[in-house]
Image (cartoon, rainbow, N blue to C red; front, side, top):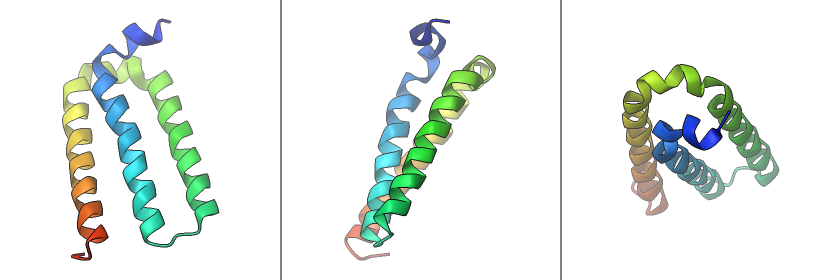
Length: 90
């Protein structure tokens, strides 16, 4: 299994998925969530993301474009929400 060739359709989503994790972590930090709990949940999400990428890529590659659109939209929405919360609008 060549991971670079297998994940070819998902590179953008893999990169932005990590950015999404950073956005969620910053939202938790600004909401004064317990940092140990935030760390644990963050690690769990990264491990689940890794396992999903490793085992579900063969099945999901048929829907790569749709997955990237939905994932990109979610990242944009979370980013806007994080910015609005940081400046006190939400």
